Length: 517
Image (spheres, helix red, strand yellow):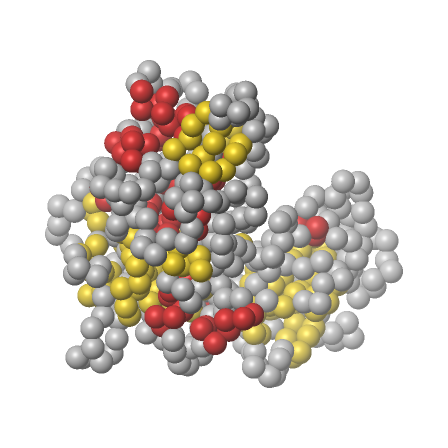
């Protein structure tokens, strides 16, 4: 493709979608002045569970005019890294604004979106003088670490941040898809198609990983233990069929050709319903196996000890998860998992995340990003030595705080506008405290109906279903949308609002299983 612009896909980026709360958290002291008193004790940052709407839109960095502009025009290291801090007033202002816990959490997600996996950004907690690190993940703008980000970079990171807040406040995994359009400074290959999706090791409502996913503190034997397991793969169980999964064991102990193999140590299998791992007492636990001779103490692979699990699929079919572990937690071995014919496993990201939710786009960075009447500040509290107060706007807010944040919805929703509003607003049903403006359907098959995006499948990777060239409510064009896919239609909807997640038709069963490991 002859072009001076480098265009590469954001192929199936899998991230934790972690969300917004329905209202300001208890204890924030919201009043007409919306003041939150902070002591000097350490405020630990926890980013595994939630980036709330308030943390996204009323934190003291993004929602402060000077801090926002500084962030948009400087390198991250010059503003946050204790060893690289510049001597400018901008760096000092940023450090003061970091006394806000919302700002710390916002920056954790920003770094996660901007920097790549394995990268970290060191920062100094101004309240404690302790050093800490934020971890990268998506790699949408890795050069922001050492230089100013640029307009397209800011829009990509904005889309990532906006896509990662939700009304439930739970940890929900999502697949983000899109394309990158940028001059030669761009990333050569920011993402690769994930042909193998590992199961989740943490449930949406949990604050920590499954016990089974944590290393054992002391030696433990047998399939009943809930430590030292590894997440292996996700598969699709064909409707009404009996299938088997093995690592050297036959489908039935009495007969059958062995499935897979075990090496170096006696291995075990566990199968769970859904796309997340499970503990032994979990209701989603289907079965565990440590071989046909379960009572054997042989620590090595053998015909008697190699595991297999056979189970019946529900009438509607469904996802299942495979976990592996050595029989002796102190040993190291390999489980080469095999499946009976016809099973879709291991599934790619495309096979696991099939519900297209919609697209997110805009820019929350820069001098003109905020409404003129909004400016979150951190000031010293004269009533408490070394204490500070965060001055936030009152809640609820009728109009979005940021001028250019947008969302459009997939036409597959029965109640698209209501679902999308629920998704981006902290107060469902009120159209208040919203992070973005919902612009309408991203796409429609009706030739006379209005839709917001010019393409429903970008040209760089056919079939991934990424909305491209999306317009805002003033018909301005945005070239950096991110399209979100979910595993389940109701992943982001609470029990009281389940009507909102109705789809016009269910997605077809996954049709892949080509991952190899």
